[in-house]
Picture 1 (tube, rainbow over the protein chains, first blue to last red):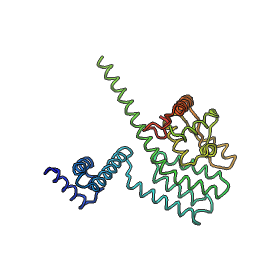
Picture 2: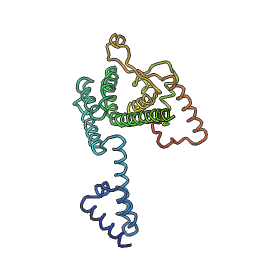
Picture 3: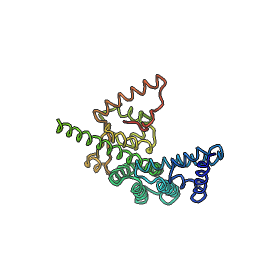
Picture 4: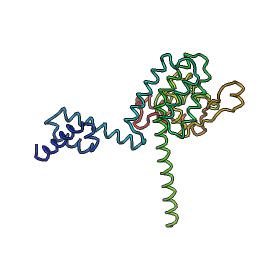
Length: 184
Length: 107
């Protein structure tokens, strides 16, 4: 290994030691990846771990930039949703699709769904729940809906990002068209 | 385009002039709500579907909250037919795997 590679290896090892792999790589995924690749032959295990952490960090960054969504907190909220659903499957909220179940669906939806879409989806799902007579069927749908909410949140946010980019592209096209016309 | 999206489009195209609500679609295509609603939202987002609340009179007379109904748009029906035909041709040719970046693939 050259002196520079040895120095980078030492730096990244120190960073890992001090901050843990994920944090070290999150600070600079590309540098970490490149440094890890250089000393791959010296430490294959560390290389694999750094590479994996770099991919994760790059994905997180891409996801958060694209959706404006914090993946770590989303994991936490999803875990809370699962816990809530588990609690619901016990005696507490199983009696009817009354205020308890509506409240839990509303609470989860307000956490996950974009504010502008939230009321519409809550109303739609509550209307579906209200039409089911059998309590077991209602409970099953309610559980399904609770697990639907995080995915709906991602879908609606991605939809919003795409809508904005389409609008922006259309606006750019109009502006360039107007500039072209003015120039002509 | 995913197989689930194809199932939903095929179901909607079987009665293109009939407005459907979410739970009705879930039952007809035998897919869970967690799959159906995100697909409906995506299809609505790209303009293949339009949705509206039902008339208050009807829901009030039946003593239940109003439902949200989905209907294929004219362009959406046309595009859905083309997309289903293309995916059928793709399967026949053996290239049935979804194209990367088209998850839920309505666009």
